[in-house]
Every structure is written in structure tokens, then in C-alpha cells.
Image 1 (cartoon, rainbow, N blue to C red):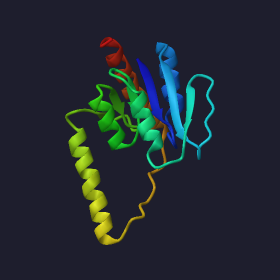
Image 2: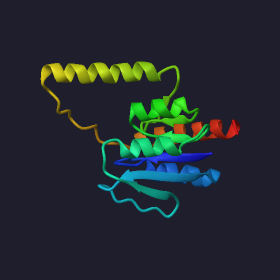
Image 3: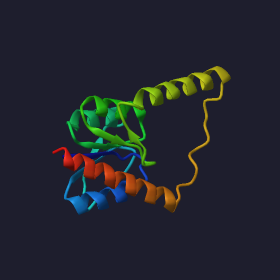
Length: 150
């Protein structure tokens, strides 16, 4: 089992690495050429800056029972399709039971923004320490579940 992180602007990389190190699991951070990442623990793969290049590289690497950390619902859906686990940086698990609804909500939101002419969204609210604790607890549970399936 390996952990793959869609690491472009991912605020939970250090938490992922801490939990992975505790369980002796390899981590690969994938980012595009617009981001510079260094890690003493993880392998860092820098992918070309093309549209969705990091997403496709991540999906090509991931296998059944791996864990994918991403905020992209499309990447999560493809990971689930390969039998991998997927988790959002909020700590929410993507599952076969919730991914279709999440993709539909994303589609409807995008469609509504296009119709209204408002394509610019406010950024996410500032991340708190509680957000980090919530993610760590959820991620740890997912790692333990995944390890139990090996």
C-alpha cells in the first residue's frame, strides 16, 4: 500500500507524512512545475504543468488499496474506480456511496455559476487547528482500515 497526495496547494501534507511515518507507509507527493515541494519523508514527483497532468499521473500510479489525498472529486472518483481509498483534505472520505452525489453537486454548481456569469468564487475559509485535528483523526482511521485489507 502507498499513499499518493495531489499536493498542489494541499494543506495537510505534513499530517499525511506524520501518520504515514508512524505506520511505515510510503508517500508520493505529486505537484506541477508551478509548485516547489521538498520532503525529507516523501518521494516528490514534479509533473508537467498541462491541464490535469498531475491528476492523470496520480491515477496512473495508484493501485487497489492505495490511499489518495485530493480535493478533486474527479480524481477521487477515478481512484475509487481502481479500488483505492480517497480522502478530502477536510477529512471527508470519498466512497462509492457518496461520490456520484458529490460529482452531480459540483456539476450543478458549475452550471449555475456559468448561467449567472459569476465564475469567480471566494476562496476557502482560513484553515484552523480544529480542521487539522479532524483531518488527522479521519486519515488515521482510513489508514488503519486500509492496512486491515492488506
